[in-house]
Length: 441
Image (cartoon, rainbow, N blue to C red):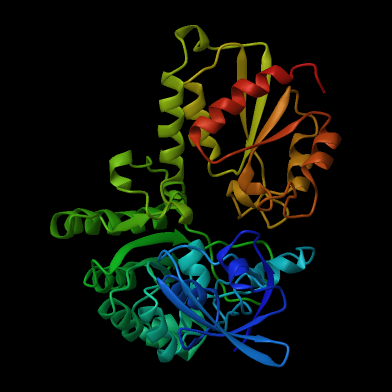
């Protein structure tokens, strides 16, 4: 497979070799380059021989360099190949539950293990062949993030809607034998893969430690657009507590046996169960935070660290400047309690839970709120500014999931809507900064 060079960085090793845009790389050190993973692995050598095609002519380029020095080549596609799509028909697929007006890009079902290694995306491995497993091992693509859901092959096939799901135990065994580590997750559905099935999943994955690094437990996400789909329901308080009881029993056992709690329920489970979020030490290295595990605890820890640095004169309750923090329904009680105990002089903060009408009221996380949801709930809100999590916006852009822009929402509400980073110290800084917006809008 030839890889076409889009451009060459000025002053780079590639420029010194005489490479230029339009050239095609045929092989590096005698190996074909399937994608970005191959390219980066093959370039991480001191000696390189590139076979390049320019027009109808092939040329050889030999290079000695520092092992990890980049060549300075840019390619047409980020992965140097197409994105690998999902071949499953999951009972709880979120894409199948999208509302009619959701943007087309949200409907793309990717399941690309390369994005798992590079970005921490969870993948099922159902579209990965034995040969590709061998390439993962050969390229030392570790750690991976794998959606397990259930270790029982028949149950996993039922959940994923494909017989390919049954191959997971042998795939994990091969990865572990090849020195690849992996974090795992189980999206749990009441009465389907919790209870005894969850016990089985935990036991089998823990037996693969340290190759298996952790297991995140996440409750199924259900929107209001499920007509014709498999009947599922949200976790009740009692059902969420039953999951946490299983998790706590295994966490204590595995901490003693393996030196890690291994099993990490997401924040949503604690909120659904009305249980206190665990203390910081129980999240260990926050290895599953991108799966919603420990986000609230870390937010409070970081907020506290920054808050302690404030002079005592800045810690008085009450104030003329009114700020609204808009969030999902589930996180509102935690945030309200956290901020009430940590006042900022001159500022009154109100935590405002916003019901999700775009995806449906069963979706209660902050990151899936839209501009339209904010407009509907905050139209008559009296405050100097509204703070929202940056997770509501498209990555690198000020656009909500319903394609409303931050500017449009601010203009309609007649007050600034300020995106805040995920960190607790960023929230405190935003409160201090937003307090200066009084009367400016």
